[in-house]
Image (tube, rainbow, N blue to C red; front, side, top):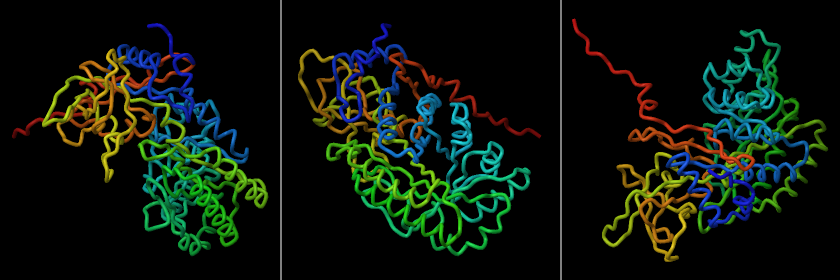
Length: 442
């Protein structure tokens, strides 16, 4: 296959100017599908790089950017961001192993999650990760015990607080109300004496994460300002250092017709001013922002091939070979209102005529609808359709085992060359973990 995945085909894919389709782009994606099979996730490393560099260039040097693997846990995506300078935020043993496999230094990994297992805490101690984000007092004391049992000198921790204030305009609120995440500020204050009793755990700062998919930059600024003020208050009350403050992330990406992308150009200068003032008052402090969706979403397209065209009671349906099982976010599972991700045709149309069609996957459930009454070039069997902005929360948030179809392949376009970064599941793969019970005979 000709190597045409260079800036010629992808030149228009810079963040903020993502085209829905161009002839060269359509041909490139169609060729990828022929080469690697359908369905297929494709990620463009240049788009990931552009987003990372935008953040890095606009934030003070005192801020470290950590990639949230939950958005897209593929080791090659993580490795690419690691080479750019990102650390890693992980929430499981598998994600920890992925980050280490990707070459992220252990001291640039933080581990968080409200229900860490003994094995996960032990791995954090043994690998000497940069910090464990503790989310309950019991977890803090478990971590101290494990560190004593392993005979380590110390283990660094950040206390995740559940602030007294809540965020607005978030796609998913994660603080400021009763939550399983973090420790209420009042409980942290009440535990001041207990924190002094820790033998091996060094509490080096605080963490707060209020929500995700913020599209109003002013809300991110307000949240960050409130988090930094709370951190300074707790520093004084608890007499702890503020070596590190993790102010979360949640920078949003617009998916739907009624949404507008985050105004990053307005956001970054205001964040920088807040951070500079905080560091001036707390010399030597480092800050962390965790970013997942913002770094990877725009880079990805989920490609499917149309298997059948049919009409039912006056509505046209295009039935494709992938859907909910690979991209649950795009089909709107869990949403109150079904809204369409940007969907385009990557097959050159000859007539130029357009029509509305409902695009579904192959599953035996009425929920398997990728796009409802989408305006597309006249669809034919075999056409290649793409769900754009699919670089985050695709495979990682989807029920890949449903009906036994398995997960598709993933491809990363790196330096103009397509690389297979996940092979497609086979039937043997899917059956390999099952065990046929043998009937008991006396």
